[in-house]
Amino acid sequence: MSVLEIRDLHVTVETDAGTTPILNGVTLTIRKGETHAIIGPNCSGKSTLAYTIAGHPKYQVTSGTITLDGDDVLAMTVDERARAGLFLAMQYPVEIPGVTVTNFLRTAKTAIDGEAPAIRTWTKDVKQSMKNLRMDPKFAQRNVNEGFSGGEKKRHEILQLELLRPQIAVLDETDSGLDVDALKVVSEGVNRAKENTDLGVLLITHYTRILRYIHPDFVHVMIAGRIVEEGGPELAERLEDEGYDRFMAPLLEAAAEGEA
Image (cartoon, rainbow, N blue to C red; front, side, top):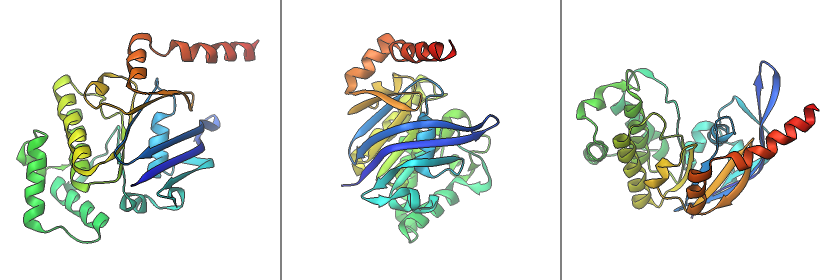
């Protein structure tokens, strides 16, 4: 069983104001087959956690560890992390002009598996996954994310998830920019991937609406780069009713005292 372990993770980023701490001691364990939701307001460090796991060079780990089945993730290159079984669905997927969806998917699958998939089986799988996600077959010949709507970009991310079959998937605000119908389709894709592969999911969001369709086993509240409360699905329901005020108030009070 694959296990992603994050221990006392501290991360900084360089800004115009200098080196800025973003994550301040995050500890989290995600096992294959589990769905974890990290919920928090904007600028709480959620996306920083996602990109740090994936290996974005912008984010510098100053202390702490990330391991996958005991192997040091921080010592791996980005492609090594993907081959080890980590997957990131990006909040803002980038365009890749000149590379079709078909070529991109098959190249990625070949890189991860170490050999090219059999054409007949692969073509069948791609067509079925696209049908499940209600994607026009012509979509396969378009350039990756070029001219895609927000919903198309998110469906393409989940198409990759279904076909690449990772061990642990980090979904960074996959619900952002989706209408209700698209949200349901994308959520069904995530649930289908989990059912077919016993996928472990780290779902990052600041709205709880996606949790109506992707049911978490564990919910973690992140504020100011820290996980400040943890619980089950009932915690998400409480946040739906109460918001983040009870977590933010102590921070605002501390800031006010510091300025006094």
